[in-house]
Amino acid sequence: MITKEFDTITAIATPLGEGAIGIIRLSGSDALAITKKIFKGKDLSKVPSHTLNYGHIVDPQNGEVLDEVMIGVMLAPKTFTREDVVEINTHGGIAVTNEILQLVLRQGARMAEPGEFTKRAFLNGRVDLTQAEAVMDIIRAKTDKAMNIAVKQLDGSLKQLIDNARQEILNTLAQVEVNIDYPEYDDVEEMTTALMREKTQEFQALLENLLRTARRGKILREGLSTAIIGRPNVGKSSLLNNLLREEKAIVTNIAGTTRDIIEEYVNIKGVPLKLVDTAGIRETDDVVERIGVERSKKALNEADLVLLVLNAAEKLTEQDRTLLELSQNSNRIILLNKTDLPEVIEVDDLPSDVIRISVLKNQNIDLIEERINQLFFDNANIIEQDATYLSNARHISLIEKAVESLQAVNDGLELGMPVDLLQVDLTRCWEILGEITGDAAPDELITQLFSQFCLGK
Image 1 (cartoon, one colour):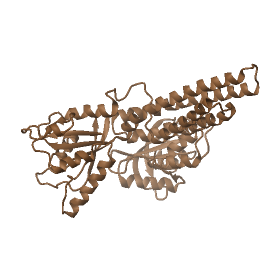
Image 2: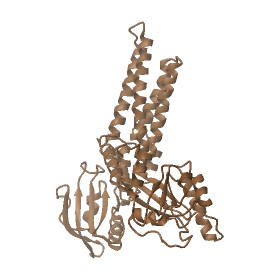
Image 3: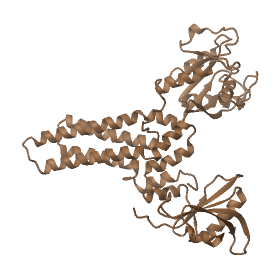
Image 4: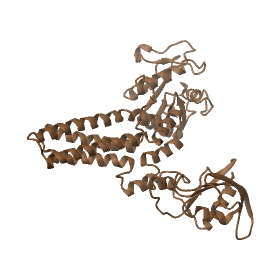
């Protein structure tokens, strides 16, 4: 693999703020030369690759020492970008890292665009698009299981599966072409049709099986948007605080305390839940509270999961019945809270699968986790060790299009269409799969994809 020639880019690779270290990263053919201009210490052109070297960053204009640093030198091609890479490890802090970054820029480096380091890794053949996207998935992972999926993708499991499928499709197209152009038997048309039918069904089964993992993978990657709804004072905010193990929501006996939506993530057995504590849905003359109520209704409509909280110690009200009706078509879990008090609610008017809890006494909260597993994972293991999961929306969309192309081939075979016409749809499937790994992705897609990355990555 020949590395392409690019200019030298730089960016701060650590979050801005106070910390033990800050890292300014450079990548490109002039990374060492630029760093040598501002570094007082060992001759960086003579140090071994993949070493840390002690010294100071000095402004060459006035000789002022900016900081005591460790310089990481990594020489091409054994680097993430397959270019020369230098990492300046300075003391953490906004002022010092920005000052050194500006100094590096004045020596001839260019400020990196978001995701440009990873983009160079892709353009230089170090990673494919699925692996590049896995880098951001690892950074954004909210649970260990989401991270495990991203790590498997970074290792190339999805790339290998897609590459193998594309090669099989290419082999099939070549064999069909040979049979058409160089027929050796009288029944060549029948043989070619049988071959295409067998292979197309095989490819379709493979991709549809991959799509079946998409729901789980997407949930593990993005989390479940979970709306906690109920009339005022049934314990919604207390439930949120219980699940979060901290006091995020204000809890009082005054109706209407929660006037806005509170959003927090919580890890439920490896599944990230984006918990939305909504304002109690009720009729009100308070303008601010009314806005909160409208936002609550919107959150209810957009949620993947609804936790409807009812007060077991009171009879059902009209508001309760309205909420039961509004949420009946949702993925809903009905929670009867305050079961530490005598039960008064009319359970005969409720579905049979309600869960009785006491947030105050921390009773049966674990049953909520079990019900979520039933609703979204069919009581199966949430993630299997050897499974290749689809979790990226772009990948899912392209796999669906590839399946449509294969279905068009199967439909054409049933209608008796000529095999050479059906090759067009099979070729289209091959091209679509290439967009997933980047082998057939347009430049506009690549630019747009990497623009979503953070600076310095």
